[in-house]
Every structure is written in C-alpha cells, then in structure tokens.
Image (cartoon, rainbow, N blue to C red; front, side):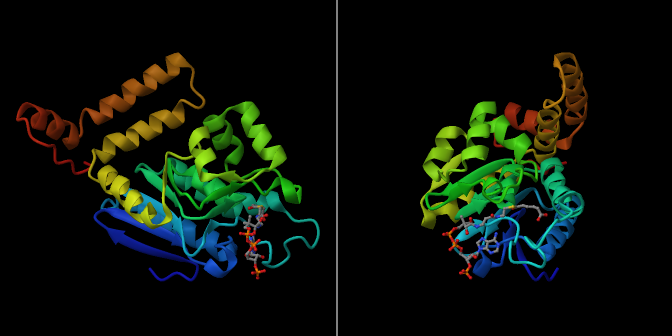
Amino acid sequence: MEYETISVSDERNVRTITLDRPDDLNAIDERVTAELQKELQGVARDRAVRCLVLTGAGRAFCAGQDLKSASAGDGPMDFTAALRRRYNPVVTALREMEIPTIASVNGVAAGAGWSLALACDLRIASTKAKFVVAFGSIGLVPDSGMTLTLPRLVGHAKALEIAWLGDPISAESALELGLVNRVAEPDQLAAATREWAERLAKGPTKGMGLTKRAINASLTNDLAAQLEYEAHMQGIAGRTKDYNEGVRAFIEKRPAEFTGE
Ligand code: T3D
C-alpha cells in the first residue's frame, strides 16, 4: 500500500509503521489519521502480522495535531466531531488490536503524538525522547485516550500534575514513572525494539491477544465479572493450537514453536 504520510515495512511477522513527516516533527494532519486508520484495519485482518511497531522518522516521534494545517487556531473548531472521526478510531484500533503493539519512541512525543504512544501496549524510548502533554499550553484537554491511559500508568494525582503543569518528561523520568518499559541509547533503539518485537511475534500470539482483551476488560469489571471473563478467555485459549504445542514442547523438553493459532 502506498501512503503519503506514513511508511510501512514487514520483517519476520513484525509490521513497522513509521510516521513520516520529519520536517514537521511527524505532526498529525488529516492524511495521517486517514492513513493510520486504513493501515491499522489492514493489520488487524492480516494474520501474518504478529506484532506491530509504531515509530517516527527523523528527530521526533510525533508532535501531535498539526497546528499549521488548515484552520487550526483560526476560531471555534468542532473538535468533538474531529476527534470522533479522526483520532478515536486510531486509538481504538491500537487498544483493541489483538496482537502486541510497541511504540518505539525515537524523539519528542507531544499532544496526541504522546497519546498514540500511550495507546500502544509497550513503549521503548530513546534517551533522546521526551514527553510533552502540550494540550494544556494551548488550552485543550488531553485527548486520544490520554485521560484513561496516563492515570492508569502513573496514578491520579501524578496524571493531573503532568496534565496541568505540562513540564516535559525525560526518557529516564518516564522509565521511573512507568510511562515507558525500557530506555535505549539512540543508536540502540531500533535493535532494542526489534529484539522485543521479534520475541513477541514468535510467542503464542492468540493467547497474548486474549490476555490483552482481559486486561482491557479489567478497566471496567469488578472481581466477579473479571473472573468470569478470564474463564471465558481461558476457554478460548485452551482450544488453540498454541496451547497444544506449548504443552507438547514442555513434555518433550524442547522450545515451543508457536504459530499464533
Ligand atoms: O485538532 C484536533 O482535532 C484536536 C486534537 C488535538 C490533539 C493535539 O495533539 S493538541 C497538541 C498539538 N501539539 C502541540 O501543541 C505541540 C507543539 N509543538 C511543540 O510544543 C514543540 O514543537 C515540541 C515540544 C513538539 C518540539 O520542540 P522543539 O524545540 O524540539 O522543536 P520546534 O523548534 O518547536 O519545532 C520544529 C519544527 O516543527 C517547527 O517548524 P519550523 O519553524 O522549523 O518550520 C515547528 O513549528 C514544527 N512543529 C512542531 N510541532 C508542530 C509543528 N508543526 C505543526 N504542528 C505541530 N504540532
């Protein structure tokens, strides 16, 4: 598929989507959200893709909404409609996609750019990365899922501190806060990302997807509902080829060869 604002590559069952507008710090315009929506729909349908990586070209991960694109800041905007049409489907696709997703944060992640990183399951950051809420400095509310993902990672009060004061967060601080899973030197970021992505893609990805579904469900379930949901998910996992292969490999004392089925 040919795109204008993102680029896509495949290697060993890992699909990498690169936000590719480096001159504008990969800021998100109409084309970016449309192309991301299209690509993520394709990923969800493609059984050969068993892990997704999202990263940015050039020195930034993503500077959020393109503030220079038509009409931004010119007067009242229907952000409600814009979010529903453009950003929310992208965030939903990332959160509900039943394969592991990794944000490989190569540089600054601001506004909805940071939200996209937060919508991924795991985050690996370059030591050059920094995280900037940005919404507050232009009088907006954090969106694209950030008011859900951020407090769950750092807690209620810290999320409000980050949203209200808006101080940039370094990669090292992000690691301490649990905002990223791992930090790598800039020249090691791609290798560190690939190492995890390939490990995940070789795993029992059907069961991993069901685990993601269960952990997502825990956001709203009480214990009784969650126990029931786990029982349901396990019922599905127990019927996968990967479960049979995992048990056989254990008994035969050899590494399992999972296929994601
Ligand atoms: O619209 C809706 O539907 C509502 C949804 C909103 C979602 C949002 O994301 S709102 C938040 C939007 N993003 C921002 O407010 C971030 C603005 N950018 C910055 O604060 C800073 O640029 C950064 C912290 C990201 C990086 O700072 P720095 O010093 O590394 O770079 P810089 O010099 O500020 O920027 C470099 C260039 O990128 C510069 O262009 P120039 O002067 O070289 O031609 C700058 O204008 C451009 N750039 C940076 N961010 C954006 C951008 N261009 C368009 N849109 C941007 N968001």
